[in-house]
Image 1: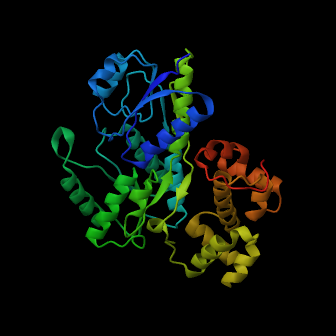
Image 2: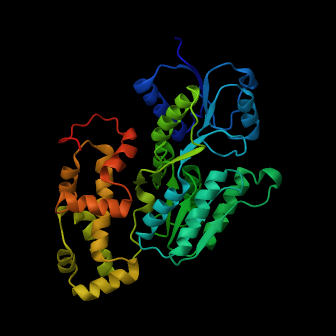
Image 3: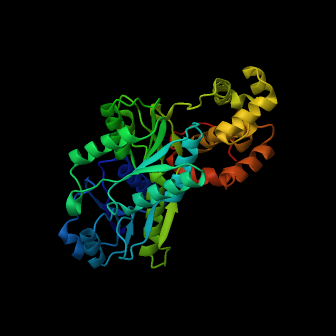
Length: 396
C-alpha cells in the first residue's frame, strides 16, 4: 500500500512551530510512513487556494484565520488544528493547556515574594487562546488576594494600533505600574516587547519589574540584555499527539474534539531571578533553601543559618510568602525532581535521593499530592522533549 499523503501547514518562523513539526516527525518515525507535503512558512502566510481541492489523506495545520479554515474545510482530507484560534469549523484541536500555564505562571511569580502583579496581552479577540491564558492568570492572582493590572492595546480601528503605536502604549503602561511588580506576558514575543518597554521607561529588570513569557523560544528569550524567563509548553508533545490523532482519523476513527497538553516547567532566566522580600532574614532563608534544599536540609538548619528563633522566622516567613519553611523546602525539591524526570532516565528512587527526600515512598506521595500525577505519569507526558540519550541509573 502507498503511504498516506499528509500536508503540514505549520509555521516555522518560531520555535513553537518547529517543535510541533519535530513531534510529528518523531511519531512518524516510531509508528508509520507518511508521504509529507511541507515547505517552510510564516505564521501569517496565507494557505494556498489549491488546498481546497487537494486530494491527500490528512492535514496538520495552524488554523489562524477564517480564510484558512474555509479552505481546509473544503478539502476532503481530515485536518487537525494545532493553534486553536478559529472556532466553529469542527477541526479537532490539540494545543497548550491555558489553565495550567496560568497556574504555573501565578505560582512562579508568587514564589518571588512579589505583591504587585500585571498581565500583558494582545488586542482582545486577536488570539483567543492567549486571551484565555491572560484571563486565567488574572483570576488566579485575584484569588490569591492581589490586584492584577491588565494591558490591552487600544485604538487603531478594526485591526488595532500599529506595532509602533502599541509599543508606545506598553511603555506608558509600565510607567504607571506599582513597583516592584511581576508581569506575565501572554507569549515570548510580548515578553520581549515588555523588556524593551521597561528599558525605554528606565525600569530595571528584574529589580523593579519581573517579566515571565510563554513558549520558551530560545532565540527570543536569549537574544536580550535581560534574558527572558519563559514557560516551556511542550510543543514536541503537541506535535506527537497531533500526528497520533490524524493517524486515527485517517483510519476512520472518531476522535476527541479537543486535547490540551500541560506545560513542562518554567525555564528561569535573568528576567525573574529576584527575591522581592524586604525582610533580610527571610530573604537569607529563601536563598539558603534554594541552594541546599536537595542536600537533605531540615527546618532546623535553615533556622540556625539565619540566627532567629524558629517561631519568629516561621511567623515572618508565613506573613511574607504565605507558606511554611518546610513547604518551601519541599517546593524546591519537587521543582528539581521535575527537571530530572523530564530530562534524564534516572529512576524515581535515584531522583528521590538526589533531591533530598528521605525515602522514595515519601517522594512519591508528596509528588502526587503537589503535582497531581505520579512521577511516572509526569515523565510519560514530559519525556517527549528528552532526546539527548543520557545514561541513567535504571528506569522506573
